[in-house]
Image 1 (cartoon, one colour):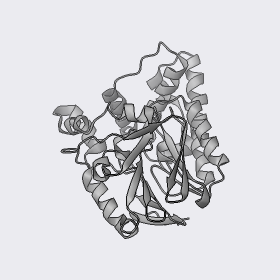
Image 2 (tube, rainbow, N blue to C red):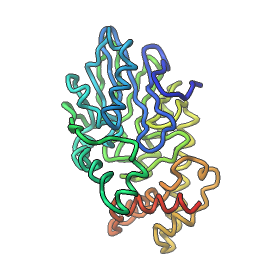
Image 3 (cartoon, rainbow, N blue to C red):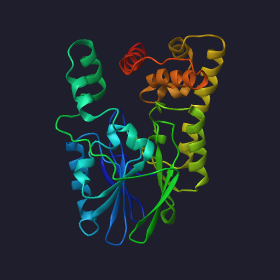
Image 4 (spheres, rainbow, N blue to C red):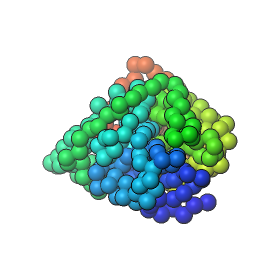
Length: 310
């Protein structure tokens, strides 16, 4: 459909995607919707260097249509840590996402990357490419719940809250006149979705909603540009995990044992397949209010262990 290479790609009239192959941990996509003299940016990137490179690549488009609005699709740092570079714009996110941004500030990831011993080695395996030093957490200036229509110099852009799913406050960005939707991390293409918040039923419903919009171009949070066929693949993976994990939970199997027991089939060829550990754990937690998840360090340890054992 479109070349999957680093940089800005026009995907529809006035709609652009900024892609970062290979789409693995931290290498997220962003978007730009250009109106008559104004633009809306969908997400910033994981650190200032990456965000500066993106904004420079977009400058031929934004020189005559400056970015006056930025939408953060959710709270993960690879979609909002670069916000200070667009601090003069109105920054919009769901209320839940804005609250969640406070939970993992850039300084926390900087400290984990520099931690001594096994913890530091573990986090550098996932995030060692990125520089979190000196980033000022820049939070949204406007929040909403449910739905919000934004006018971009005469173009209507629909913000639709679909979380909690990947995180507590996921939002998709729909541009009806261009039949284009930017999904944030509701979609990982050629990579494995990770369900930090859940329940999985909400994420499955979000996929169905995206399909119902009838978009011809779907820009995922990670991976190459797709269409509704890619949305269905993600939905089917989530439905598979929900079914397989629920069966094992009902039989009293430990969540980590269940994650290792599930035969992923073709899904095992997706990048970051070890995220099945987090996804199964989220199923267990969603179905049992008394279930306690391991801490985040243990979650990353389990993902690394599963992928190293292959």
